[in-house]
Image (spheres, one colour):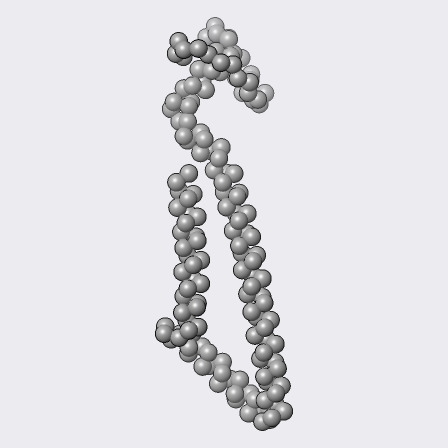
Length: 153
């Protein structure tokens, strides 16, 4: 340890660590305080960043998991609302078509609408495909930002 002024700190250690420190201090003929201080200083010089990372990373991961869980929950609620609204619209329209044009015509119209929707989603120029791409890119960007932040810690 350097010759500069020293300040005392109190740390909480497990019983096993205390026993090990006592044994090593006795073997070297120094106080536990002196040996513990030397270990702390050496550890911080050698791997302070790694030690901090080991302590902080689990907390950071828990925070990210929590935020992603909130995001996923909100996303699921929004998707559920869309599914409900689409189901209501489909049922109302089909009931209307059955009354106006008959069951067979209603079934044909529904199948044709489904096929056309699939075609438009596959068509990269359609509004639906653009919305799907935008959503996918936004989600990918969020994941990339979070991944980069985790790598930097």
